[in-house]
Length: 129
Image (cartoon, rainbow, N blue to C red; front, side):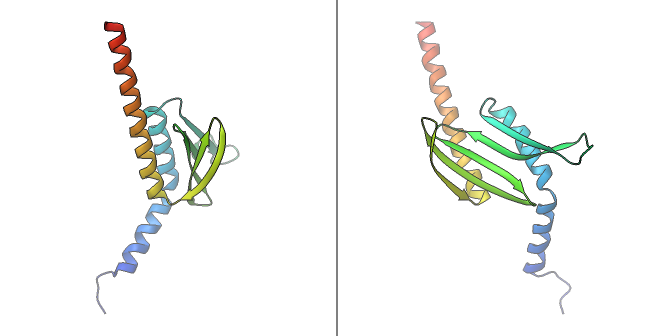
């Protein structure tokens, strides 16, 4: 028998480690999003106990142009979904795996930044003419 761990053991260890850090991940991600795109992020926090002063993020919602991205921590699992809405009416909601959700959110934030940059350039040009 080999003394080196096999792929199953390594994958199981990585999974256990990532599950233990979900509260920390959610809180750090929430703080980063709140600072990066203020006014578009809503964070729901829950106290760690009845008399605890410490709380952690359990749900993060990001309002993008036509989508709302929600990441929730439920029963030691991350649940990700994206809803499409037009004029305040939700047309569809899809469950996503977390890596795909993060990639889609990244693309939305990049599009928002490009739009804001374009608007800033137009305003600058208008004010300078």
